[in-house]
Amino acid sequence: MPKTLTKLQEQIVARVLADPMNTLYLSKGQVNSAQSLITKGLLSKYCYASMIQSQYLTPEIKSVFFGENDVVFAIQDIYDNCWLTFEDRELVAKPRSKEKADRIVAALKVLRSTELKAAA
Image 1 (tube, helix red, strand yellow):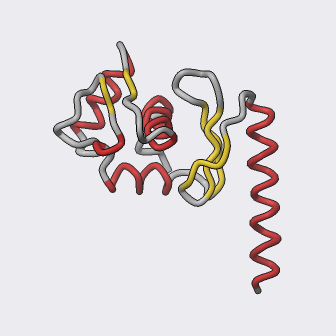
Image 2 (cartoon, helix red, strand yellow):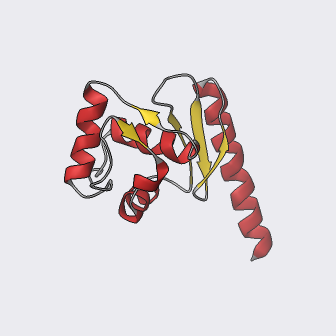
């Protein structure tokens, strides 16, 4: 099943969700991706494509973003300075390398399955 969001669009959404108090400034192709999201109705029509803030993320884009990813996942930051690791729709870590992000995701998945087994 093809994903609704491109990799760049996922990175944009992840960054805004990870840092909701700041504005994400975009340039060049990033602006085109944001404009596409506005056209599809996944970002508010009042959003400037070059400056995205958390209030412009619609419930639909959040549903698509989290629905198309696992419960625990990591995605590279749009500025390439870290990996954003999410669990249950919340940011849990910002490791600097992919290897560390993979370790965190693997550990959280093991912990999650252990908790589910203990609860049953």
